[in-house]
Amino acid sequence: MSLNIERTTIQNQIIQSRTKYCEPILKLLFQEGELYHGDLADKLNISPSGLNAVIKKMQETDPPIIIINEIGKYKIYTLPDYMKEYFRGGQHSEEIIDSSNLFLNFQIFVESAGQDWKIKMNLLLQHEDDDISEETINAFNRLIVFLKRAYENWDSDWKKVVKFLNNDVIEFLVKEYKE
Image (cartoon, rainbow, N blue to C red; front, side, top):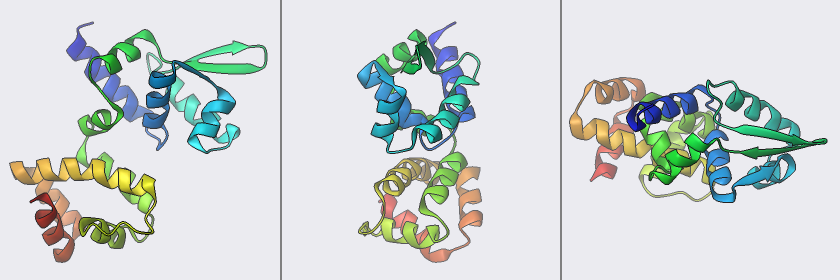
């Protein structure tokens, strides 16, 4: 498989297994090499049982983007060689998200920010991130990369964003933030 096809395939696999923990898991496994189930759950600050559902989604891609080795009752997670090569090729977790689509990043931000996402977006656009979780700030930063690109190209995605936001203040702040 050529590297370009492989990158597209990998990006699609990551999108298929979309959870807020997918990219952090991939990044941790790339950095650490391998991690036990409990250690990975601790590093992600989630329960071991909560991690099971995330891992299951990651294993359902074809081919899987994560490898599970079982030693007795212990599970050890690693990345397949093609994923390691993908990361060594200069791809980082943030870039993986960038290469997906604008509205997927919007969804991730909105899910992270909760019901008052417009208020949080407004605050973040004004660089007021006190009392906003790091997860929401990271989701916002990933989203902004795509918003800037859509605005600079004035493509149909930007027009959809404006329609979705339906808020002149936030639209103004996005334009101002871009500059």
